[in-house]
Each structure stands twice: as structure tokens, then as C-alpha cells.
Length: 270
Length: 370
Image (cartoon, rainbow over all chains, first blue to last red):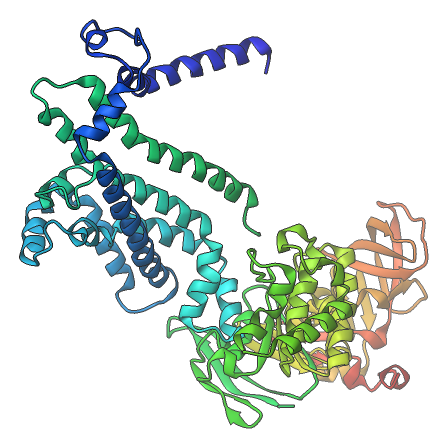
């Protein structure tokens, strides 16, 4: 490829990246502005101060929300990985009558929008008395059809010979699962883990429904809180809160990206 | 050491056709037993039934006198080497080798000792800390063999273990596997589609075709006394030359090219069947007045120690193998002679052997007892 073409491609990439990231970059910028700057729709803050950040931590229990979000996301991630990997193992390796039908049923649930089942889910959770507890925020998400599908597809790519070799060595089915299948699929487990952590972190509607006080409320609801606590919304403060909420997910992606790349270059054995 | 006895073992997947049909054989302890046949002949299925990875549809399998049809794989005291070696990519060579020992809760010291021993035996000592992906094909193969060695199972099953290696390495591994088997005295059941492997490695060979046993015997028995056309063509390289032939005036004639005078006893055996003539490439010589073939040379391959001649007989391409180097030109007419004593005659329809050097009592006794 010649240099002119390369330059052009990179220029285009840079511009599209700028457009895509603009909302986030602008949020960061606004988080350092005072009320006047926001009102004048300035692009960059005229003076640089951390006042908004101080304010956001004092006006709402942001750290408490962050902790809640972290606990909920971690629990859901662990739960999803456990349930999905066990189910996927059965669907990929253990034959029984009606297995494929069952798998199709699991897949079919992907087509039912979450919103459609929300009310009945809420009633169930309420009936169980889980409102305002971590249970309500985590347990309903443990079984994920998407996760089962993703892992099953990857488990299917494991050479069947490995499974048979392990059988001959005398491993039980569960031993094969955690000593052969899981280590072999480490990368797709990491992928699914990141995916479920991020989706749970960004969840809004369900946590709003099942929490009525601050005890287990997550960061996303906390942000919404910022808009209504004040009479006139202070956008600088809200954006400071947004930046704080984004930060952990960004860090997670940066760390895991390295891990993902390492996994990709490792490659499987033919 | 335990004898393996198969009695009318069959396998069917759709309850209509057999993948393996009525296999009857007993394999002696310490024997190197080769299952050979073209792809799809059921040899791998048979091996997997022995391993317990595939259910036996009918018949019985007994190991050491005990019925083993429903024994799980790990209770059969076997080890198995797969075509793709089945190494665990996330474990190092050392961990791969002792994987099974760990599961069987063998003491750490014993594990270490056995791994060291196997690694030395197979020349893997320098690679123990590496991951399988950092090894060459031959080294991976050795790791798979080492796994068999440390397991100390009396029976070892191998499913085309050499088919992923290049020709040179294959030749080397053939010898190594054979030596290993003799050194450890284990019973080996070895599946291959390569007749060279079968001939060179096996104590006995079972030739399979479409799930049916064609012949069981030592490599030389199979080579010298094939029971039918299939076995005759499958074993030997280049394969036995075949051509449809007819009897005209007491002579065996194939096309315009070949004409051989037959003895009265042969003629009697043939009667009025339609027949196929078979002759191995090494039994076609320079013209010496006997069993004449007149044809045109199609191709000449000089291999250094021998020369392969290709020519047409009754619209099939035949090959002759001559020792030494022969500078002949393709396209030139040539006259050849066939060893009358070495002719095979097969029934065209049943493919069974009608007359062969063996039942002509001209077998070279000296060769047999070598």
C-alpha cells in the first residue's frame, strides 16, 4: 500500500473516531466547566476545576452506588458464567433424547424482548420478597440464552478427540468439564464475562424497578438521581457523575483487551 | 496380560446397514495387530468399539476372558493414541504426559519417575516444559506415545497415528512404535489405511472392506495368499496388476497384448467361469520366451534401485518392477514375460481366488521359513 492511501485511511479513521467519541469527550469537557460555560455552550472549559467532582460526591452517595454496581455486576458475571458454561457443556457434549429440541427452546427465548417479561418478572421478585436486595438485581440474570449459545458454539469447536482421550484417561464428566473444557475455552469465557459485566453495569430499567431506596441502588440510577435532586440541573455535576460511572468500564476494557489479544495470538492446536 | 476376543461383533448406526459386520478374531497378549482397509471400511469404528467410545450393537467383546461390552473406557485398561494426538493445548508436555496419572491418583514421586523414564525413552527430555503448539508434528506424536508409555496399560489402541506426518518421519516413527511395543510387551491394535504400515509393523493383519473381514493373517500370508481380488489389490505397492482374461485354445488371453499357456489342472479349476488375471509387478520380467506380453511402454520411472514400467494390457495400466536402472523410452514397443508360476486367477463375479501360486504348490518354501 502506498503512503498517500495509508494517510487518507488514517485521516478518515481519525475523523470517524472523533465523531464517535465526541459525546464522551464532550462529557469529560463539560464535567470541568462551571455553570456559565455550560450555559454559553462552550466546547472547552474556560477555567479548569474539580469543583463538579467534589460536588457530585457530596450531593449523592456516589461511592455507595459504585460499590453496588460493582457487586451486582460481579455477581451476575459469575452467575452467568457458571450457569452458561454448565448448560453449554451439556448441549455440546452429553447426548440425550430431546437435547437439540431443548437447545432450540433456549435459543427461542432470545427472541422474546426482555421488556415483555418485565412485569411478570417484577411480580415474581416482589412475591419472593427480594425487592431492595442484591438477589433481585442478580439472580434473574444468571441464565442467559446468549451466553449458553456463545459457549456451546465454542465448546463444539473443541476436538472431540480431546473429550474421548479424557474419557479413556478415566475422567468423570465433571472432571472433563473443569479440567479440559474450561481451560480450553478460557478466551470465550473471558469474552462472555466482559460482556455480561458491561451489560449489567449499564442496566437501568430493572434496577430502577426493584429498588425503592439507596441500599442496593446502582450507579446508573444514581446518575438519574442527580438530575432530579437539584431544582435546576447542573450539567457540569451530572457529567462529572457520568465520567465517574464510565471510568470502571473503560478500565475493564483496557485490561481485558490485553488479555483478549494474548488469547487470540495463542491460538488452538490443529 | 489379557487376550482380546471378539465374537460376531457388529455395529450399525441406522439399524439397516452394518458399519462393522460379524467380526470374529482373538488377539493374543503382546501381539501387534493391524486393522487395515480403505477409508470407510469400519476399521476405526471397530477400534472405537474396543476402546468403549462406541457402543457394540451386537456380538460380544471380552478382555481377559471377561465380557467387556459395557465396560466404560477407563475400566478397560487401555491407552489410545489418536490421529490428531489429542494433546491438551493448555498444558505443558510434562503435564500432558502425566495428565492421566494425576486423575488415577498415582503418587507424585511415581508420576515424576514414569514421566522421566518415558521422556528419556522418546527423546522428549528437553521439551518437557514446552506447550504442544511449540512442538513439531513428530514431537507431538512422541508426546502422545509417551502418554501411552506412562499409563502402563497392557493394551494400546492407535488410530492412524502417522497420517499427519511427512513420509520420512513416518518411516522413522514406524520403527519407533514397533520397537516401543516390543520393549514394553504390550498388545497393540493399530488402525491404518496404509498397507506399507500394515505390512511392516504387524504381527498379524486384518483386512477390512465395507465392514466385513476379508482376511486375517501374518503380513506374508496376506501378501502371498490373498483370498480374493480385493486383498490382492490392496496389499502390495505398486498394487497387483489385474486384467479381465479369457481362455482361448488352452491359453489365457487378455486383450491383444497377453497370452499364456496354462496347465491342465488350472484349466480344470477355471472351468467356464469368467475370470480376472492377477500378477504382481515384480513377476513381470524381460522377455524370455515364456508367458508373452507384447505392448507399448507408457511410462518409465527410474527410482535408482529399481525401475517401474507402465504399459497397457487389455485397457488397464499395468506396472512391472525391474531391479536396477533401465534406460527405456516411453512410447516404444516392448516384449515382456510373465512368471507363469506366479499368476493369480480370480473369479470375475465372486472375486474369490480360483488359482494362485500357493495352491499350485510352487510356493518358495525357503522364503516362507526365512
